Image 1 (tube, one colour):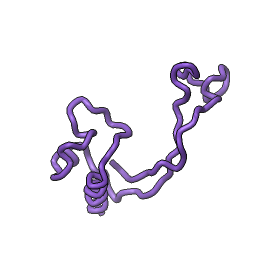
Image 2 (cartoon, one colour):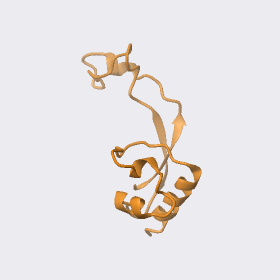
Image 3 (cartoon, one colour):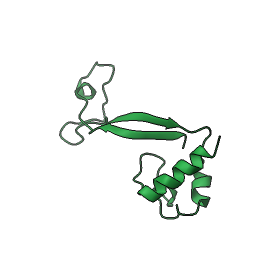
Image 4 (cartoon, helix red, strand yellow):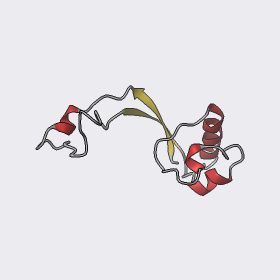
Length: 95
């Protein structure tokens, strides 16, 4: 992890993803099945260094965090308030 972002707006369909020939066309997007692939997030904070997956796996209090579970993908994951606080502490200690 390198920092923090927050949801700035509820997700919405990107209509350009459905327009063949447009630079944002996404052939995997189908308005009937998958109405869009975009959501809006906003920058909050950059950590002074990277918090690695190995560090997350070793951190006390993160044992049940979704991203450290076997088979989880490194992407957007839900976190509890306590997990969020622990990750912030880990990230801010990098400085």
